[in-house]
Image (cartoon, rainbow, N blue to C red):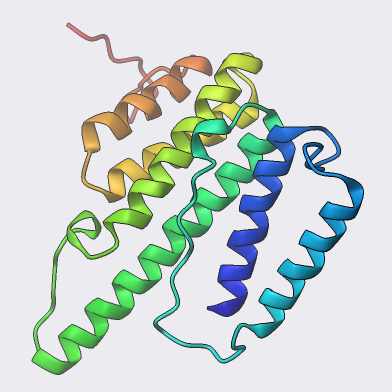
Length: 190
């Protein structure tokens, strides 16, 4: 999990850097001050314990509202995927542990677990990435469609099937997919 936290932190840093300026440098500080800050951060990172502990959690990401570029949207979507999958793994692990200790199977929806914050963060990141991509790319662009699909899957996981199906229908509409019956004959809606 330490590697997961470091990966998530580096994605967060990349998102912040991509939104601040093209080279990713904080121009509000002098070059000397940036070097000192980098050394200080490196020492803090080295001082963190390297043992894997189940009590580690991801830092809170406050850069969500500042996503403005396509590269930041890509980083946001990658982080959203990471958070969603991490929550799913934790949820499944928790269910497995619960079912083996109580000899019953838990059927709670993922949205009802203790991982609501990670799912909410993932939802917010997908939404921000989709907003940026829809602003800057045409509606049929593969990145827009991929983000809609990922958001639909998350919404379905959280039990919001109506919203998930709305995004899925938008994807089908872009490709002008028509529903057909098993014989290959078009069904007409009445």
